[in-house]
Length: 181
Image (cartoon, rainbow, N blue to C red; front, top):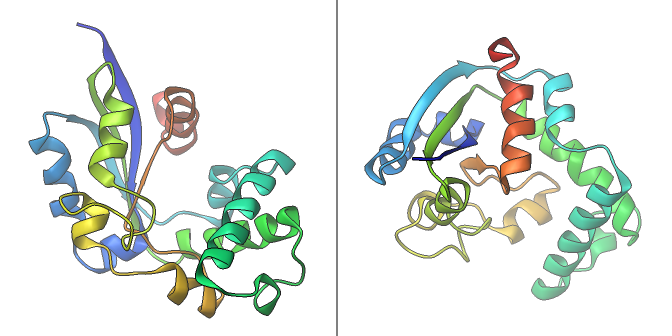
């Protein structure tokens, strides 16, 4: 049977709240296998490499952030120096790097049948716990909101990272587990 791998990380807020075992249990209860894991403290360099340094990434993240602010009736310029999506995306990347390096994480390679990347994304739930379905990791265990993070000028804390695609998973696996070649 063909296998697919993904990269999953319990973020600093999940580790700090003692949720690593619960998150891992939900993944393994769904029939997925932990190939390897390591508890580690990410460096700033690793955090910067994890979040792409490209105008395409900045534009995507900045556009989503601006849309989130508008949806909540918040003025983007109350927090950011401009309403340009690339400027916003660059600031979000800084916040994400700050957050990712704020404490230990649990980095994992997870394996399962073809479709595993999407299965994990479904188990994790929507980015924001306030919009994640009940029964998902973020929907059941998450407690941050866009309003709290945006009004505090910090990254959104949502417990876990899961690769969005097979290509992204392989890039992240090489980044976080260079010792595996």
